[in-house]
Length: 122
Image (tube, rainbow, N blue to C red; front, side, top):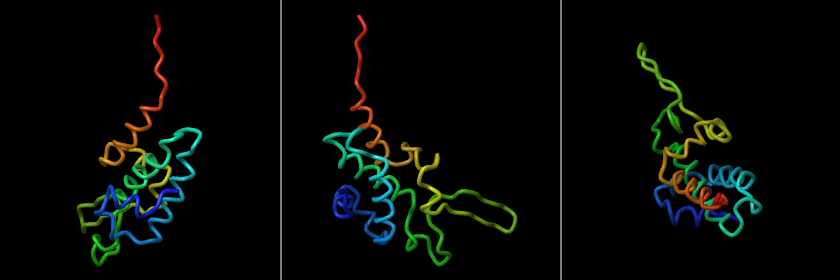
């Protein structure tokens, strides 16, 4: 099973995320990235996908006093306002599947594509 320690090896900047956030992301990723689809690369794929999601989520410490976290979901000019995505907003949404938003997501896609059988038509 993917662990916080494994994720922090590739993404030490995520160390400020809470254990609850790590647990939620790791458990969600385990349901999406299965042995039957990824075989011997399942842990590597899970680690990179988890790092991708954890990067998108952000941390409450970096969000400041507002307690906001995650990517900005909306902005308003008059009376300045910003809304941020929560963890549950990201799982299973198009924001979470925009793998190009992080280097970890890009690596996850690279792993996924390497497992797709290539056929040669003659």
